[in-house]
Image 1 (spheres, rainbow over the protein chains, first blue to last red):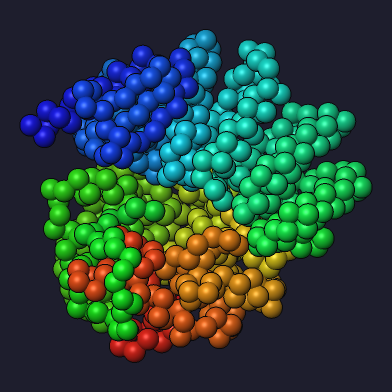
Image 2 (cartoon, rainbow over the protein chains, first blue to last red):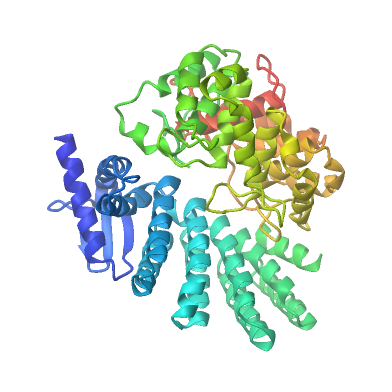
Amino acid sequence: QHAQLQLLAYNALTTYFTTHSHLTPEIEVLPPAFEPNDALLLEDGANLGVPKKILALAFVHARHLFFTRHTSDVEEERTKAHEATRIMLLFDPEHMTAANHRKRHLLNLKSCGDSEALVDAVWAERRFMDSILTSPLHRQSKSPTLWAHRAWWLDLSMPVLLVSAHHVPALFAGELDAAIKAGERHPKNYYAWLYARRVVRKRRESLGGAEWEDFLGTCAQKVKVWCMLHVGDISGFSFLVWVLGLVGAPGERARVVREMVRYVMDVRLANESPWTFVRMAMA
Amino acid sequence: MSLVSGPGRGVASLPAETRLVVDKHVRYVQSLDTRKDELEYWLTEHLRLNGLYWGMTALHLLGHPDALPRKGILEFVFSCLHESGGFGAAPGHDAHMLYTCSAVQIIATLDAFDELEAHMQDGRRKIGQWIARLQDPETGTFAGDEWGEMDTRFLFNAFLSLSLMGLLDLVNVDKAVQHINSCANFDGAYGTSPGAESHSGQVYTCVGALTIAGRLDLVNQERLGAWLSERQLKNGGLNGRPEKTEDVCYSWWVMSSLAMINKLHWIDGEKLTAFILGCQDPDLGGLSDRPGDMVDVFHTHFGIAGLSLLKYPGLAEVDPV
């Protein structure tokens, strides 16, 4: 009966993921009080509510399926394992072996030479990562394993997307936004803001001169406003200090610090974080 | 983090303990491996080897080194070893620096390098070489595995593992040291990489690595000491970064860092001791991140290690590194 329920839970979740793979579902894990009475999952189009119990049961089945197939020589078996990783990572975002299998899947497509399939898979991976990293999932949105996976994906995707002439600036803006959104989901999100730094650095590689300064300026403004709305968030402030350090115009840095000091004093904030920002920015 | 967790109280109304309930903790750690049928067992598979290290080390610190069977421990550890020389979290899991480090620490603690050789010919060297291959020749830092994530945590793992095996000469220590130096922030603390946010855990890994390399001269000890002492909150507990809540595991990350730079007295030890003791589950054993939460082996280990640093009577002495 236990095994049957595990299979039912697994099938329900897998079906949802597959039928919505062209979207970026927002996923929530439901506490017992909010469990649906008549179904395993709570579906509302691109929104999914999965009871914690159901997710755990699905995970047990998924891991068994994964470990019996992930090193198979048969492609179909490896694909089944790949499907299982979605549920594994949703439940256990630190499952490196599952994340690595997803990397291998993309590498296989790359070596096959079917560039269209690869581009599709690259975007699908991004949608999956957005779902897990930017949904209101407290543990997942801060996962070092998932953010490292995203960093690897970014390195892989850049040349692929450049070749097919996708709009690169929008991609970077999207990546930055994803990091900031995850920063909202999980306060003081160390690895999301670390990823944001990576995005900014990588942006510089494909941009130069005046465009780079524009990008930095926009980024600094965006994060400055974010920090003013999240005054207890040391990670946001830490990122702001860092990005201001890259800004070329000397007056710009001083202006932002002055704005922040004025704001902190006007609102009479006693939080450690904004003052840490001021200390660091002056150093 | 919800790691190998045990039955906890979950009630915040219990009085703070005034003593360490050693026997309860020993039994708690022993009970962890017997729950093979439970869901928990599968759910924490991705760090089983770490969990084993934490449990075993806690027992050693509590003065009960034989409470877990040596043979069983080593059998499991070796079952995680790949041909390549790296260890996964559990059998069938991909190799990674984090688990390799725990494996080497376990083998070193049990003085079991002979058994390692019996299991895999030239095992010590193979592991050393697996680790050494992960050093980035350009920056000097280390990746966690073939997929390339770089983090000073992995640098420390590498240094610790290699020094325990006497193989530090396999890597470019100077280059790695230079890299750590570039991770120093204006506040005196350290992050995962240059320019990253300061974090107590990363401070421990960076200062630990510098200690192993004999280069504490590179640390701004006054500034770092001040930053670390700011981690203590009114309730006596320590946090990991400004404005974060207290967590018993920082008793280790922060305190060992302070110990390495000889500023352990910059923290109120009495208050911290009381806080750590308050994190115990006095009925079923184990420690949680803060009083009243569910216990797990991760927090049990680091809470006890913190108490050892504070020279709590009856505990084995722990090396800050």
